[in-house]
Length: 71
Image (cartoon, rainbow, N blue to C red):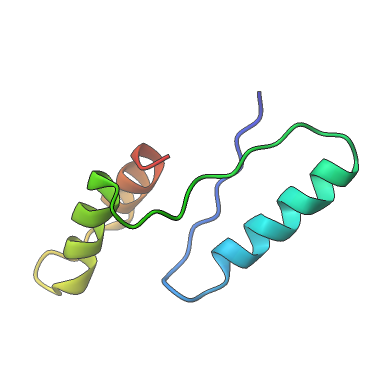
């Protein structure tokens, strides 16, 4: 299994790139799945709260862990 992660700030195009990669790989016969964009997932909600408050804005390591755990 290969896992590919797209990291970036809100609105940077991660979802668009992920969708295009998914379409391209699927057309080539590679079995793929993409994460949901459901904003009600608990980790996603907690991560969003951290991002909204400059006092709790996560460092790179925390951001990576939370982003990975969300999937």
